[in-house]
Structure formats: C-alpha cells, structure tokens
Image (cartoon, rainbow, N blue to C red; front, side, top):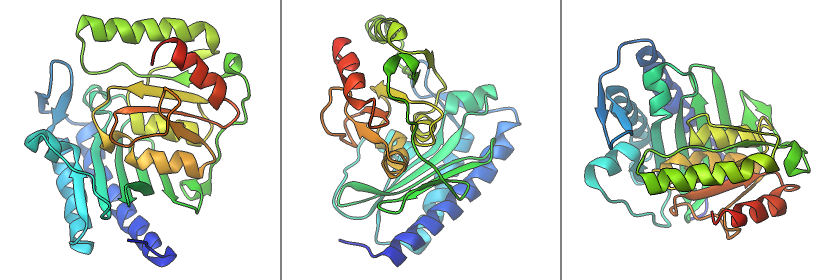
Length: 272
C-alpha cells in the first residue's frame, strides 16, 4: 500500500494526539508512588505502561481500525508479533521505564508507523521535558515544530557517544557490554547512558549526540519511531556490523553521515 501526503499528515496528526494523551498519563504517574512489577530480573513494568498502551491503541484503532498494531505490553503478554507489509503501528508506551520509576526525566512515548515494513511516520514525546519529536518519510524531522538536523561532527575523537546497558544482567552479557564500552571510551570524547533508546535516536537526530549503538534491546517498539526521525534529520541508521538496519533484529546504530564509516569500523573491532 502506498500512502499519499495528506494521509501521511493525517497519520502523524493522530499519532501526535495519541502521544500527547498518553503523555498526560505519564506526567501524572511520574510524580506519584509507582506500582511496579518485574518483567525480568531488572526490567520493570508499571501500571502506567499498560494504561498508556491502552490510550494510544484506543485512539489509533478508533481512526484506523484496519491497520495492524504491535505494542510492547501486548507482545509481553502474548510473546509473539508479526511485522507484515500492512500499515502497522508500533508503540512503546513508556520507553525509559526504569527512568520513570526513579523519577529521572528521560522518559517518552514512542509511536512508529511502518508501511511495507518501512518506518514512515515517527513520533517520540517526552512529556516531562515537553519535547515532541516528529517526522514523516521524505518531509524532514522536527522538535516542537522546528526543523532538526544531525551534527556536523566529522571525527570520532571529538564525538559524544550514547550507549546503553541492557536489562539482562547475566555476567557474560554484562561483560560483553562493559568490554565494548571500555574499548570505545578512548576513541570518542565521552560516553553517556541515558536509558531510552527512542530518545537516544532523537538525540542523534537533533545533534545533541553524534553516535549511538545498542544491541539486545526489547524489540521494534524501541526504534520504530526514532528510525524515521534520524533519517529525516539527515542521519544514518544501520546495523552495528555495517549491514542495513533491520527493524526487528534488536540491533541498531546511528550517526551523522560523516562519522558512519569510522563508527562502523570501531564497532566491528568490538564484535558488535
């Protein structure tokens, strides 16, 4: 299915409305005592996660009942999902759940629409910091309505890298992650770990950070919204190995075009 400009704009408007509505629930829950369950040993899920997914899907399904839907909490409950060529909304109701639980304001709702498996519309909204990132394929990327672009940084050694730990704290996985960080540290100016894959991608898109990589994250809901925002801001999104980005591989890297080749080489050296 192809979608014309007016329908893509309508999709974006609906996604923004859904994100803002879910953002109200996030903002309300952020300052209250949290009711928390454990998804895994460290990964957390809150009542607000589930409520936000219901809010987003409720509004989207009202407008687009024939579209497909993939959500983090829905998949957590069923254990499966399938990405087809049909228009598919992929939602992370709260990316940065650990931040949410701890009152660290790097929290967002992420909504991506794929058409033909290609990320086509992206909305990432941080309601605590009041930052709304949006993009439509071929139409540019925006922060609170203002155009954004990736940085013009051209050397790794003067670049800011954002990386993340992963919820699985088994020793071999932790060792692989920390060895990678140790290897990257001398190659870049500094490293940040901020706790939200979607917002990390948006950070690359608006030039706050220059480099980002992550492997073994939850699923396509972490990257579906941010992927189109990065590319529309003039950035590159790819597999850390240097191969093409695969939405369902649970592997992602992003940078500006100047840094891509050197970044891939550095990532290959740590067998990422």
